[in-house]
Image 1: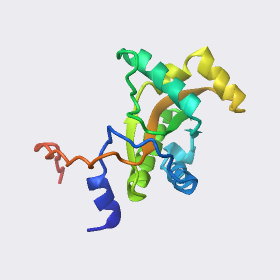
Image 2: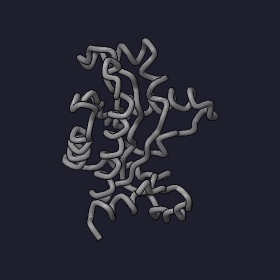
Image 3: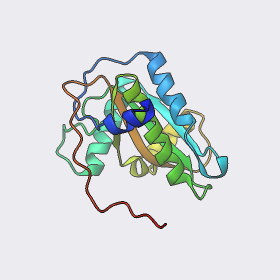
Image 4: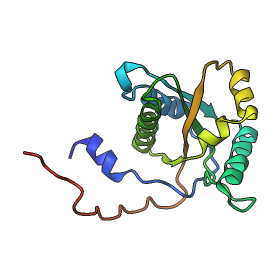
Length: 175
C-alpha cells in the first residue's frame, strides 16, 4: 500500500501523551508540512503559532478548558507538550478550509514521524479575546486572523487506538 494512504488509514487522535518534548527538527518538519497544505486560490492564508513554552501551553490549556466547560484541572490537550495553533486570515473566503487542511497535513506529518497528535477546537474563541489578540501583537502578527484549531503533538503514552470500522453508505458514484 502507498505510504501516504497507509498513514491516512493508520493515524488516530491520541488522548494521552508523554511530557517529553519532541525534537525541534520534528516540530519544524510538522510545521513545514502544514505550510504546504492546499489553500483556496493558493492564498496560503494559514499561520501557525508553535507553543513549546510550558507556561504558555498550560495557560492555553486552562483557557481552553474553561471555554469548553470542563472541570478545572482537566487538560483538553491530554498532556501534549506542544500546541501548534492554526489561525487563518479572515479576509480570505476559504480561510476556515485552508486552516483545516493545514491541521490535517500536520497531523499526518506527526504520525509519519512517530508522534501522536489530536485536533483540539476552541481556537476561534481563544483568539477572539483581547488577551489573545495581544499575544498575536506581541508575536508581531498583524491582520485579522481567526483561530481555526490546535494541533497538539507529542510522544504517545500507550498504544495507538484501532480504527473504528468505516460506516457503509457514505460513497455515491454519479457515473
